[in-house]
Length: 398
Image (cartoon, rainbow, N blue to C red; front, side):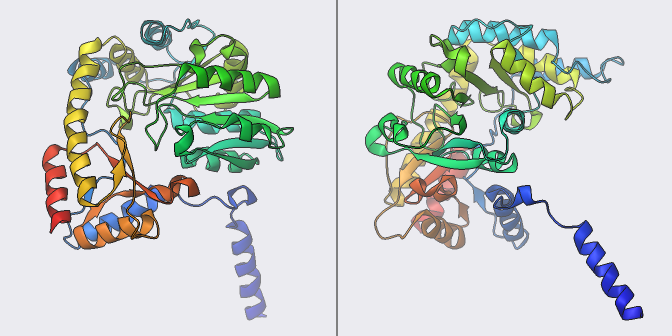
């Protein structure tokens, strides 16, 4: 009797703790697992140099920090906030898009501040995807596109980006797919991890493709100000608002990754639809954060130039590091990383990066985590000081 009771209790416990089907095929994020391994190595005295993650180590502008401090010190700034975001921030985003991208956005209806643009990926998937719908994702591409789509119940189809096509979508190949159930398509330019910049022609063809097949394009645009003299928004192109929503972020362009401030921009109908989901998931963003973010968007060209001057110097060091590994790469990449192909002596990027981590205590990202099109590539982050990069080069040369 006692054993039967124990078995019943164990079965009930297992049922109560059973993971939902929506997490089937979704693994813990690669960097979440890898950082634990690096933490254990550091506890053992390895002093690992992390060149894997694009988390800016530079601080935000002093005026941005000052605004956060001053606003947070006020006693009336700590309550729940507007679900649509502060009008101050929405107006600042509207002016920023007009100034830098040449895009007109109505701050009342076409802008939705987010608690990070990564949050927006999930919101969009949950807003539009029904079980059985299909989502197109780039290969290689940001893993969260696939994870969010799967969690929302989608069937995922990867479209392969190839070097010979300048890491852009091959629309002839896309037309050969069964597109009947495709609801969303994720694109990301400047592209991560390849660093490829967009062209006007590619963006125009993308919009035509979306209109033809009635697909909503989700353009993820966090890297447009990093090592790029011509920031572009997909929303600038004729007819884009009919078929495009665009995510943007303060994380890379303004060194505010830990602040978790982003934005979704698009037609009023799209913003209203996403807000239906989002307003049930959070209770607004801390107002001092929003006001400080608005201050960040007022910064002049000197700010972006100063940040990019640092990254250009670091990129030269990364080129030197990659040459030590006998990797090949294009020097004209945008974004926070350098994407490089591995030498022929290695099976894939995992083999090379594991060797560098274990032998040299330097962590570099294997680009197979972004899809099998990245199996023969690695990615090195620019978010490390020249001193750390010099030390990494020294270790690899030994």
